[in-house]
Each structure stands twice: as structure tokens, then as C-alpha cells.
Figure 1 (cartoon, helix red, strand yellow):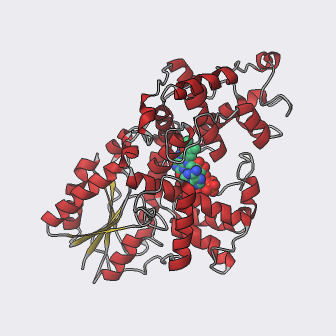
Figure 2 (spheres, protein in one colour; figure 1 turned 180 degrees about the horizontal axis):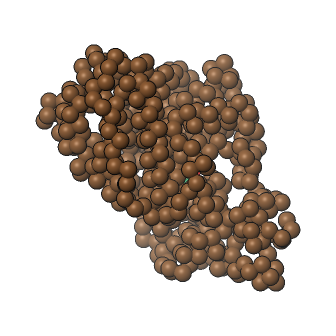
Figure 3 (cartoon, rainbow, N blue to C red; figure 1 turned 120 degrees about the vertical axis):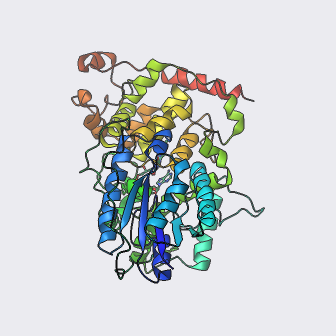
Length: 473
Ligand SMILES: Cc1cc2nc3c(=O)[nH]c(=O)nc-3n(C[C@H](O)[C@H](O)[C@H](O)COP(=O)(O)OP(=O)(O)OC[C@H]3O[C@@H](n4cnc5c(N)ncnc54)[C@H](O)[C@@H]3O)c2cc1C
């Protein structure tokens, strides 16, 4: 067999099911392909942070594959509609007779793969699709009635039991060097066209699987042990792993993450310390949202999970939206999160929850506006997790927070940023304020610092959103 491995969101050489199987089956050289679908990604609202990181990750993959004598052809395909023909052309050009790739759970990606499988069949190419994005494939777990889980805890219980019964899958090493090259690598277009959004310093997010591995090893060698205590303190370095951009492009696999944790515990899942146990449960949220998206594809198509909430009377106000996007709401903790997002292309999970709830509950704006803004701004944007997170915060999703749960940003700030260090870092005009007032500065202090008044009153906003949700009944 002469395989072509089509890379998508699995940009690594180690523990890559498609690459591993292709190399095992190959009788000679192996070739690889990456399609630049920039028009499609723009349609998916991806911004510059994600596009830049992806481009750097592809360049790193090309170098890593070249060291194995596997040439990576990088070709422009525009949108997914052009992908099937581009795959067949690449296979022909590289003299391949089979295409290997790893499945992606999103709706457009599923349609693309269905069409590509057909195009390959028509061209006489074998088609091999693997499940690789998660430790357990999204549709491998089912409720007792055979359905999709809509609540996290029973999903987690089944996930854990399945692994305890079947054993934890071992990550595969990178393949060994291939005998010879099929074709020469192609660097592809250097200009992917314009993407909206801020430019994020590449030093903040070095690309590639070695960078991902370093980050994983550093995290599991120490910080993970305090994860249960520190994961909500956004200002602390090492409070969380910051691996999400690497998981999003597949520079590291979920199996590698799990195995790095278990290797420090004799391979045992059931006796993990508090920090590692809580971290693994977070990794499984990622799997849960993929499971939900697979069972309820409407969530990947802009629809609410709770259909009834689509009748909610969301408000439209461009000035409010702009104030939220730019971190000018007058709520320091909210503004700090949004400014971190603009500067780093990343935001701490606690702040993602608070800023998302602020937009959907305090301002009563449609969660889709926020989902789109995050997609444009995040280096780690991932449809299943982004959509899951937004719908959780807006109380329109699976296992969502109840509609009457409306975080008070000042209380949240005092609890999770008690000395105000996070706000001081991202909202420097408030840096002179003390811990007692920084999360809710008095009017005179606001004027003195040039910081706006709250865009909306917390109590008024809370009553407004509760009335809107009650109106659905
Ligand atoms: C409104 C909203 C939008 C979000 N958008 C995204 C997104 O586009 N991409 C994304 O990867 N995550 C998203 N998340 C989930 C979560 O905020 C990030 O995964 C996390 O902050 C990444 O930081 P970390 O790598 O340090 O996480 P850690 O705390 O170190 O967790 C390890 C990994 O577990 C997974 N994970 C952790 N928490 C969650 C969660 N709540 N949901 C799903 N997976 C989780 C991530 O892959 C993460 O990298 C969103 C959450 C919310 C509330």
C-alpha cells in the first residue's frame, strides 16, 4: 500500500492514529497532505490568533515529517467544497493508492469527509478514517437507553468505568524514518489571506508538538498537584495547563495528556491525587462536548441545544456589544478577562464563564454573538468546547447552569482574585486601587482613574434576564 496521510486537526507525528496505521500498512514511502481551507475557516469565524497559530503549527509539522522522510504537501483548497478533488489530486501526484485521516466531529467537517470518501472511492483510492481526537470516541459511550448523554456526571462515570474495564489506551510513538521520499515537500501558500482579530505574540504560544510536550511535562511534573486549589486563580502561572491551543490543533493528543498523568501514578486511574483527578475530569469535559455534538449535530449549526430557548427575546445593542468586546463594561473583573483575550488570544476558564455570563445574562445578548467573538479572538478556538461553554453559560445548553444563576462579577472577583492582581495586570488604569475597592470601585475612584461606570446594574440585569427566561414557560 502507498498511503497519503491527510492532516487536519491532528498536527503531530507521535500518537497519531492515521499516521501510525498508514506507516504500519505502507510497503514503501508515505506522503502527507495539509489543505489550507482559509475561506472555510473565515466562514467558521476563525480570527487571526487561530490562523497564525495553525500556520506556525503546520510549518513545524512539515519539518518534523521531513525528518522522517515523509513529505508534507501543503496546498490551498479555499473551502471544504474543494477538498475532495484536492485530496484525490494530491494522492495521484504523490503516487498513493490510499488516504488515511482522523475524524473531526463538527457538521461541516463530517460533510467534507463524506464527500471526500466518495471522491476517493470514485478514483479507486482506499479511504481509512480513524477516531483519534479523544481518549474514547465520541459515539462509543451511550446511556442505558442507547442515547446521547446530556448531563456530564453520568457521562464521566461511564467514561471512567469503561477505561477501568478496558484499560487505558497507550499512546503510540512517532513512526520510524521511512525508506525514501515519495515526492518533494510543498511549502504551500505563505499568505493565507486576511483574518480579523488581534495579532498575538508568537512567543506566548510557541508552535509544534515539542512545545506542547514540554508544556505537558512541566505541568504534570508539579503544578498539576495543586490544580484543584489553584485552577480558579487566573493570575497564577501554572494554575492551569494552558494546553488548549495544542489540543485544538492536535499538537498533543488527549491520550498523551491522560497517559502523562497516569504514568506518574503507576498507570492507575482510580487512585489519582486530588489535583490530577480534577484535571482529568476537565479533559473529559472536552470529550463530553464532542459526544454531545455528535449526538445533537444541530449545536454545530448555530442552534440552541434547548430548542425552547430559541424564543428568548435577546437584546441588540451595538454600543453595549462593543463595550463588552473591548473590555469597557465598568466591571473590572469582566474587563480584565476580555482584555487578556485581546492581548493573548487566550482567556482563563473562570473568566470565560464570567464574561460569557455577563454578555448573555447581564446584557441579555444572544450567546451566538459571544461565541463568534471568542472564535475570532481565541488561539484555541474549538467549536465543540466553545459552543458547549457558551450554551452552558447562557443556560441554553446541555447540563447548563440554571437560568437564575447569574454570577455577580464583583463577588466572583473578590473570591477568585482576592488581592486584585489579575485586574491590576489587565486593567492598568485601576492599578492604584486597593484590594477592597478594585472589584467595585466607588464613583469617585472611577472618575479619578478614567474608568467607566457599570454599563448595567447587576440587580436590575438579574431581574431582567430572569423575567425573560420565565417568559418562555
Ligand atoms: C464560554 C466558554 C468558551 C470556551 N471556549 C473554548 C474553546 O474555544 N476552546 C477550548 O479548548 N476550550 C474552551 N472553553 C473551555 C475552557 O475554558 C478551556 O478549555 C480552558 O480554559 C483552557 O485552558 P487550559 O488548557 O489551561 O485548561 P486546563 O484547566 O489545564 O484543562 C485541560 C484541558 O481540558 C479541557 N477543558 C478544560 N475545561 C474545559 C471545559 N470547560 N470545556 C471543555 N474542555 C475543557 C481543555 O482541552 C483544556 O486544555 C470554553 C469555556 C467557556 C466557558
